[in-house]
Length: 303
Image 1 (tube, rainbow, N blue to C red):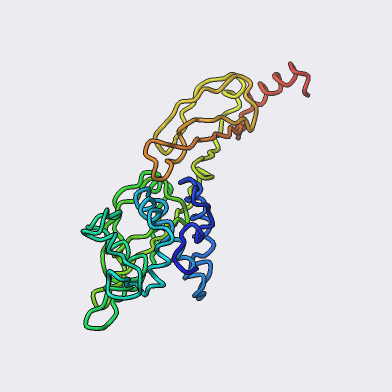
Image 2: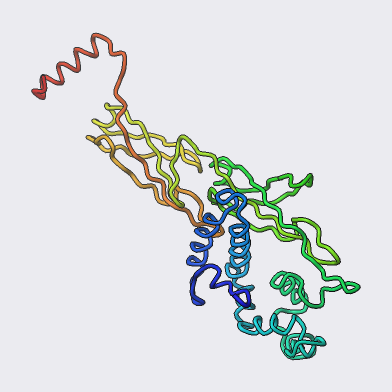
């Protein structure tokens, strides 16, 4: 594409919702992830492209600014990153600069935003040498399911440098985030590269995760299943007391709303926890217990 069309990079329409953008990004990030495509430069390029597109389109403020300029970005590149107001090219960007009308970006982030969009093109020369962004780094952070549920501060080491970050609750296995300016140093005044951090979530024998929902197997004694009662179930947010109805059958399923996994980047929202009740048969029966079972079977004509 002639200019960086972030909607096209993610394969979504310009009126796409935040959820549609997030879904498209996750699908493409997994498809082009370097671990899935080792030694594939094209896949690596695509991976960086979709991460950059998601960085802008998933942020309402940045997306609004991107939408304001639209096709003018293509004219900016064709003009050689200069323009009449910058001493070359033929497109006057002074309308977006101080004193040339309303600045849709604000002076504080105008140069930073365009520097990241166009890789430091134009105005990024020092002594006739083009400014270049630093190398992008890639790293992985392994979390337990409980740690992914809770989130919180973590420290990782990348190229000998300790980096402290806060993990948002609800991250998924294989999810990648971009940490700007945490990559290699820039050259000739260019910005530092980015760090692409991929999360790896360790399997938990207690739970199966599907999106933001969890499934848990809960053993129930045959006595409690037959007569009913209460039972405490461990969840990631603490113990919960559930009621077992009399004559509960094996493989009965219960749903605990809001006891699943936190929804990423949406504080206060949670998936559901599904309980699968399985009958736990008694073992090593005594002679008296066996006799009682025989009496029960006789009462029900099952012998």
